[in-house]
Image 1 (cartoon, helix red, strand yellow):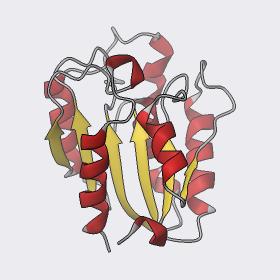
Image 2: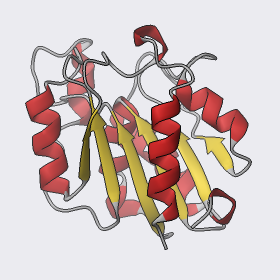
Image 3: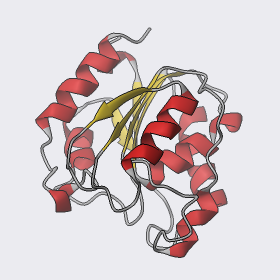
Length: 183
């Protein structure tokens, strides 16, 4: 598959992805990419976020590739039972540990727990060894439960602009390789 053959849905996390974030850069660079907008970025409500992701997926005209970061991963996964259009694949980056009672802000826990069944589409989970929103072993366990390919980003923080991942060329290359293997 090529990006032009899919609807690439960019699903940011808590507080959205700013202008320097890799998701924003990809959205500008990939012609078929569009952001899933949330009404409230800084006070996320699970039902609202899941509904917006569901609406975007079900409104797609081509097979969908999800590109989710942080809390966007949780919203995308929680929306799976509502999807009516085909998901060709999912590229999940820095999923938060929404079952951890120490997560802050605390209301992010309302997005959990994650389902533990294998996902019904190909997926990749990319995690950092020093992400303050999720322990590396937890991310690896989540990926294993979902049947996702798992990639170690090293000590990369939350894999966002604040931790130095604006352009993120390694992510672009990994995404290009991933999408090239989708049907």
